[in-house]
Amino acid sequence: MVVVLEKNIPDKKLENIVRHLEDFGFAVHKSTGVQQIILGAIGVKPDFDTRKVKILDGVAEVYRITEPFKLASRTFKNDDTIIKVKDISFGGNDVVVMAGPCSVESEKQIFTIAEIVAKAGAKILRGGAFKPRTSPYSFQGLGEEGLKLLRKAADEYSLLVITEVMEIGQIPLIEQYTDIFQIGARNMQNFPLLIEMGRASKPVMLKRGLAATVEDWLMSAEYILSNGNMNVMLCERGIRTFETYTRNTFDLSAIPVVQKRSHLPVIADPSHATGLRDKVIPMARAAIAAGANGLMVEVHNDPDNALSDGPQALIPEQFTELMSQARKIAEVIGKRII
Ligand code: PEP
Ligand code: MN
Image (cartoon, rainbow, N blue to C red; front, side, top):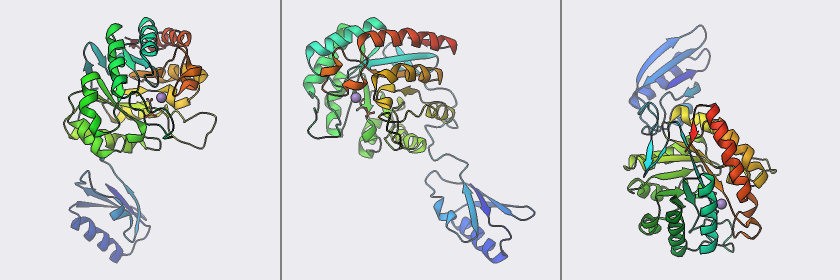
């Protein structure tokens, strides 16, 4: 931690700051400039609250050098994490496409969509059986029936399954049907759920919270990793800003920002990020160009009558077009859509 002191600080204030830093357990190195003194505090623990130093009289700025997350960081593990789910690898040079409806609605619906996305080249079928809806009056998902249909449809078309888990009590049930657990944006800081995900036997895709900083997001990943599950991927799905012309604001720069600091794969979800069907293809292209390790895209055969998120669902022809464009973009940056 670097502590920048106010200009021309009186000796008394300086001594007080140094004493506090030593009491907190740091070794202190002083470097004196013409007008300003900078203190290096060595030995910052991940849980140290830098505000304890910021509020000391005479302190101008405090910079943390070590990251508060450990297992998620490149300092801990420099090589990209490759998550193997059956014959699919997340991370590295492959770009994995996960596609399907927002919610599983019926046997006919999920089988129709599974066939479409499989034919177009997706490898993983998405679909919610337990839905975190903003309104309690909206469709909440088919529950276990939805899980069964999702699994059956995925198996029929040789796809893997990803589906959302909303609370601890659902884990044993969902684990029987899914290949990857999805933690939704609204649950990114549901810490008891993250801890249990750390004990789960299957990989987890952790969506970024609606108003979460990259650091908040990585700290949530840290909860899962530190409880034993090293197969964590992150998903950028847009954040809340002042902009109203899209559902959320797609924070594309989060992709390279996270990849620089963390070894975990990063997936992009242009569907929830934009909320509008006609914005999904351009932003999916951009996400691949920015280095995303995968895409999650909502697709529906009859979006006008979808029970959730119809306006952002691609129609089948659009999804096929997206796949063809995605392959070309991936090639340009030395990757491939698998
Ligand atoms: C979803 O994937 O359907 C979903 C609810 O996403 P998010 O948690 O990103 O809103
Ligand atoms: Mn959705």
